[in-house]
Image 1 (cartoon, one colour):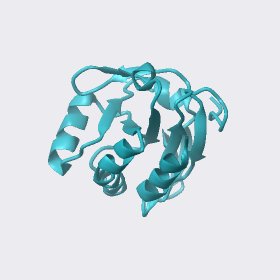
Image 2: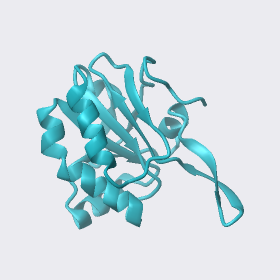
Image 3: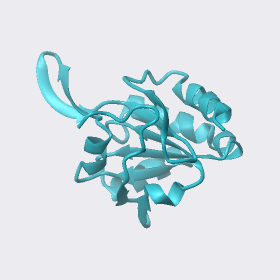
Image 4: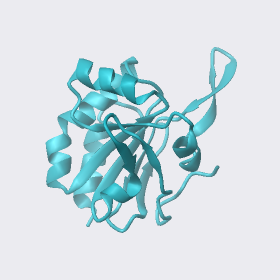
Length: 155
């Protein structure tokens, strides 16, 4: 599925959270940072999640919430959060519906082997439910700070 672009309505979703389902509608009227990452407890994903957690209070001050999504289970997310003291919410897209609707389930290549996986990407969703900004092929270093600046500058 093609990736939503700035100005598009954010694709609706409901996915498993650690204690209850998480839906896009839960964030209505607030800004949402929706970041997709390949897998819990891998080096880049751990760093990215820790960076977003470190800025959680700043995101809250900007009236923005952060939600990380991968295809790992809610139980695996709970272990990941506890192990690394993460303070942001994580959603489990175990059936792949959300990664498909956001266009981040893509063909990747590693050492010449092609496989399907999640592209590290972030979507900033405005209070109106529209995509305000998209970051593709995210490089983890300083990404959370860049997204925070964009969230602070979004009305």
